[in-house]
Image (tube, rainbow, N blue to C red; front, side):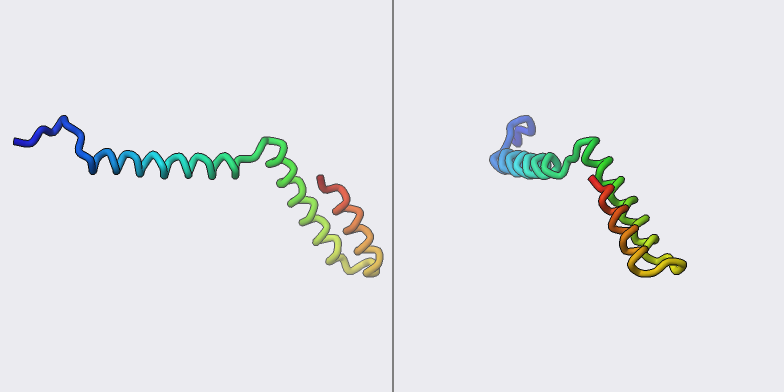
Length: 78
């Protein structure tokens, strides 16, 4: 007769394995987690870069002018 309430060694091994996987996942997520300020700065820098790229595409000015404007805009990054 099988006692279903009694844990088996395989059950213990499975639980231990799952705990290790969860711990590794939690540690990885903590390393990837960003503060609110870091998230804001990355978003801001992305928008600034997009604007700088579009300024460089302007045809009404010379290359020196558009490059200078793009550099000036990129200096606004944090």
